[in-house]
Length: 194
Image (cartoon, rainbow, N blue to C red; front, side):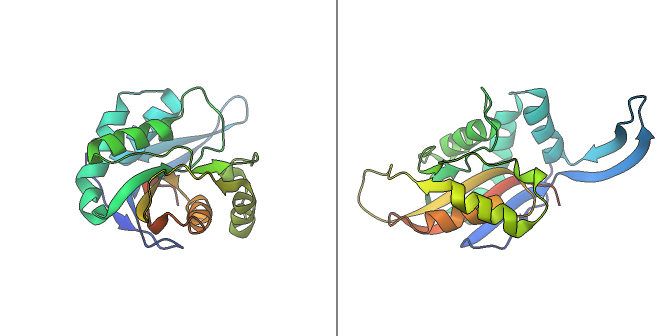
């Protein structure tokens, strides 16, 4: 799978995405119900993420985890644990959690699904257009669960599936910066929508 790794800036120590989500998208007009139709061409990572998230194709998980580790592990050498961003939508199958587990397994480091928790519901971030509003809502919703039982201060990797404005990763980072057992915070996402 071809990627075009990009560095992303934010409240974190270092951050990366594997590739853009979409190469191009052409408006084709409205269908018979008045809904817009597009001819969308995704990157390889974008298509794989689309198949996983919206077509429930779980065979994409090992492929994406392999590409993630192959292209980003050298940039994340000091990372000791992985923390997935808590999902904004409850589903019986959480693609991001499964991706984070697969990456943690390939990197041979633990995943902590419950260090960063959402203590209140938020709307889906893609439905909020103002970045400051997104960050504010997320900062209000995130809290820390002291799940690390060992002493020490660890470098952590926060994983998200799609990167848009960076609000989710910034809020997660700012919240984790208050946790005394976390030192440097790295972030990574599979694809970028904007």
